Length: 239
Length: 218
Image 1 (tube, rainbow over the protein chains, first blue to last red):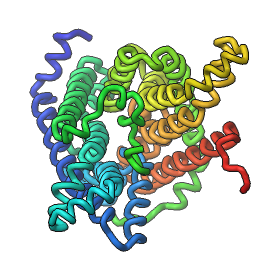
Image 2: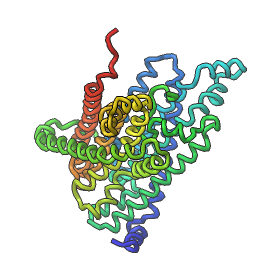
Image 3: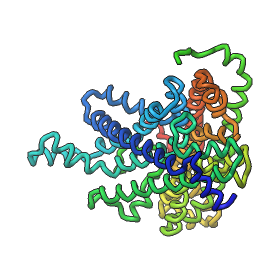
Image 4: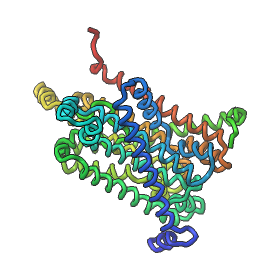
């Protein structure tokens, strides 16, 4: 096990580390993008729906979805379809939706009704209320959800290698199967760096996209409930 | 792929499935034990101090961000194949939720209550054990519940590094045997059930340990 050995394993044309890294990034970005769009849309619809029962059902199903282990979900989707990139992408997207959905729901629900009334009174259309008041005010929570999804998707994309979708997991699994620490680490180290970079980029994006008046000061951050936990705020997020 | 569930396979492997379920519980329990033993003292040390809390929380967050299989793989050259890398890796994941909730709980203890405790002559140790910890308990147990549910899920990855548990049903018996559906479904259902049951059990423990949070009869 040495730095040179690890580098050699990463660049070994048979293992194709750079190619697997690119596959990993593609899988993660496509799934995260799709999960974010679906999650935000469904969360908004559920939060504004007059049919309380339908909204309740969506939230319940999402909550249940979070207790199914991500690896189990991926295995199940692949077992019901076939090996390959397509089924893996479906599974990654499906497991990315619940955190975004639940946080969007909590965010939109938590917007002060007085603020919405004021916007209506100023002549905002319903679409304007949504895009210029409700969504901007919910952005911190929505982005917290997207970050939770991103962590899970990048992590589960490692397991996509086990079902024939490629990615950096190919190197880790190959290292495990051959008992070769160089190959193992040639997969594990880039995976860890990629995941940490993903998290960092999203944290910065969340800060930039948060309306200035909503940016937490440090003292508030100390008192805030744990943001990195996979449980989105289900109650009033302002509490 | 339209095979159904092979109930006869489940019947023949009932002993194995029971063993793997117990292993899964043991992995989760060991990881949570280690994580608590680390998180509680650290939370106590950094509570109320910005920079130490930011550093400890940041380290825990970074550990949480590393994909589980990669973290197990990083530990493997040092700890060898088996349960050790899985338990240590799982403990690292639980750390961030436990630490944050414990700090939030400890900081939520009103200063007036602490003053009163000192006023009636409590030593710092009594203050910790008889006032601060009990009042922080609901937040701590919420952290334990969140961490336990996610640990049960991530423990399915232990099978890749020879750590055992229900992941073996999904990986060794399912995916590696040409996507054999029955063990995959069994593994999924059992892990999900385990998570739900443990969550409910811990909620019960919280109720028992914090009787004063229950509303009295009107």
